[in-house]
Figure 1 (cartoon, rainbow, N blue to C red):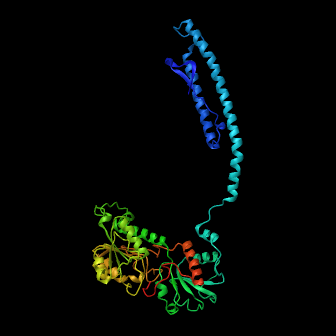
Figure 2 (cartoon, helix red, strand yellow):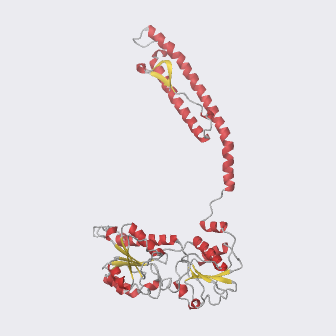
Figure 3 (cartoon, rainbow, N blue to C red):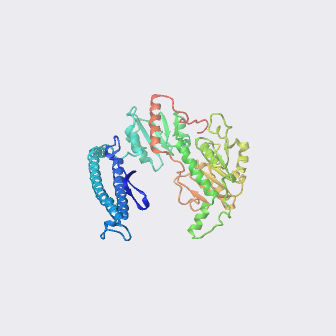
Length: 468
């Protein structure tokens, strides 16, 4: 602010004006910032000059016709005229000069900015197309396929089989389907495949699952005597997806969300659904069956949310398995501790591998050992569950809720009583699915290692002796 000598406002206050530095002359100033500053300068100057002129006209009332104010002496009148008239012209000249200066500065800025900015936009429009989808980016950046003449056989009952086929072909593989020529096939890629489709593959070196499970491969009589490695997808994000699903399923039972939904469908405002009391996390006991990659992640996630979590596994924990870091989880193991585990779990989540020992493990014996009114969630394999035992437990009130994502026969037949059961939630085997781009990468990598005879990553090869 600069004080103008000889100018005083009302009450003798000094008048000041703003001193402006031309933004276009500041070295290194960003063009966009300079334009904004110039606009601000124009507004500031207009306001400042308006205030100055207003004060001057107010103080110099003798500028109006009549020559003097009422009651003022002639000496004061001449003094006011002398001060006001030169300043009025000065202010008018300053305003015009500043406006001309601003327009020149803005013109210079635009002249310098447009030639620099325009080519940038033009080059971006030409060289930066929309980012490719995740599925296509892997194919675009992947290295050359190892031994492209080696073909694969794809056999799956999943509805996504055409997508897998297309993505594998994008990576350069020749993909055969059941019934086609398999003379050059060296890798089978399967999921819940019809038994026998691999029997006629003479050069089979390995069989790759499209998911984490391998039980359907171990149950194929044609594979048992061939001695080829059975491979699985190992994806930590699948464990995270499963944990997210289990959090939802647990909270759905905990807060009786299905009952609220039924009340909504009946247009019924019912605040008594939870008996006017919310069950807190620390009050709900959750038991996880199986502590592999997925079971361990589920147990850790629920414990981290404050639930009282226990787990059961067939063998005692070892220092190298996924249960060794479950400090907040009580781990039971073996047949002798199975019913103790069940008696302490209001919610049981099954994530066991399907083996001879675990087939039919979700049965009346387990349900009757659980606290009355509990919930069961089968997210592993359909053959773990004895369906009639579950229906009886739901009918008697021993169990109040069930979430089923897997079934002995998939797709689930329309006549199955689970579809319309008010206490059962049915999902089409979607609690945690393989991410296709990630799965393709793993299949390509495993195929190359198998063809080279190189070691495979830890956890990829199933162990037939353990059943998973």
